[in-house]
Amino acid sequence: MGWEDVRAEVLRRIRARDWLPGAMIPNEEALAQEFGVARATVNRALRDLAESGLLERRRKAGTRVAALPVRRATLEIPVIRQEVEARGQVHAFRLLDERMALPPVPVAGQLGWASGAAKLYLETLHLADGKPYAHETRWLDPVHLPDPRPDFASISVNEWLVTHVAFATGDIAFAAEAADPRSAEVLGVPQGAALFVTERTTFTAESAITFVRLIHAPGYRMVTMV
Image 1: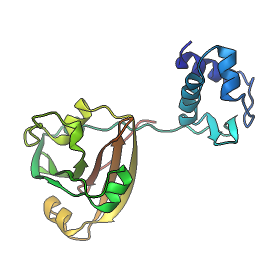
Image 2 (image 1 turned 135 degrees about the vertical axis):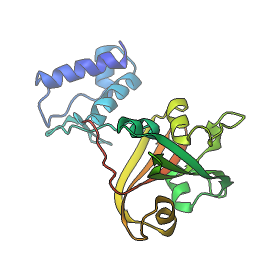
Image 3 (image 1 turned 90 degrees about the horizontal axis):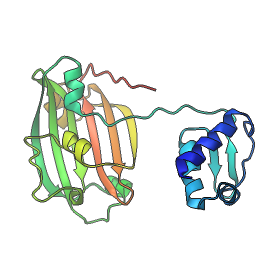
């Protein structure tokens, strides 16, 4: 029995109301003994259901069925070229900067990078029908790149990472911010103009991959499936 089988049986019990909303369920050790599997297998199944909002897990307090299950949206990392082409427009991009440098302390701290460790910095402008679409600034751990390094002037780092580096976890944040001097210059908007900003971090199971900040040109509209 694999973790998917354990997950299916736990889900069946929740749906059949063998375990009622808000009720505690047996601990991992008891479930592992019942199903004849390793405790790690049970942990993986329960973690998946918790991430789906069906279980609530608290350290030293056990696991209970969520009283009000939350349906969570899952966001896929988009390939900006495909996003632009889906709008019926022609995508192009310009690599504005590529260099090894020390990331800002907040970025290094967020990704768990050691202070003083240089990372790859890339700045890219994405275009739709020749007009600015998104200003991308990114910090990337070069350990995830092959040797020789891809030519990011020929394929955007966004597209290369999505198609070549698998991530396990990540965080994403959205904000409306006033255009700083650099973004105003690159996107061709007045300084201080309101812009939609996406910040995203991604990790493998062992280490951080990248931090990216996307500043979208006025008129950008985000659509996702839930």
